[in-house]
Image 1 (cartoon, chains in turn cyan, brown):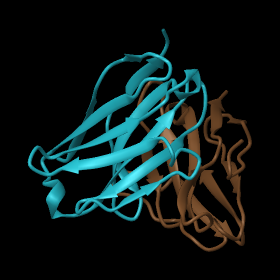
Image 2 (cartoon, each protein chain N blue to C red):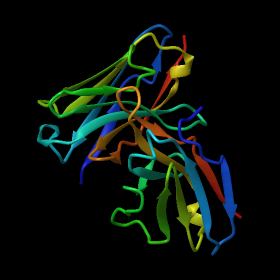
Image 3 (cartoon, rainbow over the protein chains, first blue to last red):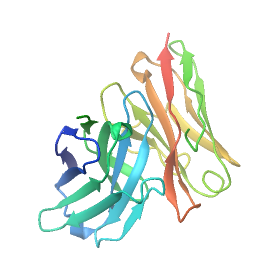
Amino acid sequence: QVQLQESGPGQVKPSETLSLTCTVSAYSISSGYYWGWIRQPPGKGLEWIGTISHSGTTYYNPSLKSRVSISVDTSKNQFSLKLSSVTAADTAVYYCARRGGFFDIWGQGTMVTVSS
Amino acid sequence: QSVLTQPPSASGTPGQRVTISCSGSSSNIGSNYVYWYQQLPGTAPKLLIYRHNQRPSGVPDRFSGSKSGTSASLAISGLRSEDEADYYCAAWDDSLSGHWVFGGGTKLTVL
């Protein structure tokens, strides 16, 4: 079945750029769907970061838009997140997910801590 | 502060029926589908209800969703201990060029 797996550094320094990759298995990204990132600060709720289509069209959370970039690499069947100028408030579990009309398949999540 | 408003907690005893509310506005729940997610401790959210009241394959019919105006509800009947989890509502919001919004989550305790 379709699976998603996040990867990337578990710790990022303040003011630097957080970079994560989501690898999709058992489904070719280029075949369709949208692919997104959602985060969850410790003990808090979910926050949508952004979504990208298989062709590269992006949609971002207005509150993060100035710092977020999502890209897709169909050759590697991956999509990636970059979040710049991070602060402690960006500390969270970051999930990647597939979106048809809704987020139906999620990765297990990866914890990213912003700390010097 | 979340765009969609949920009660922070809910509780019930085994076998009971509990309801979790989700309040929004005309730009989200009022004009778009509502989705519900269940998050067990230490795990990723799992889709529970889509398009207001549809259940994905494998989700027991004890779980049901409804929507009225700018509010939605998740009902769990025949409460079981394994239902103890956090529940989140979600919807697309048409404002600000469109974006996904979530509720703050409701922690359900089975007493």
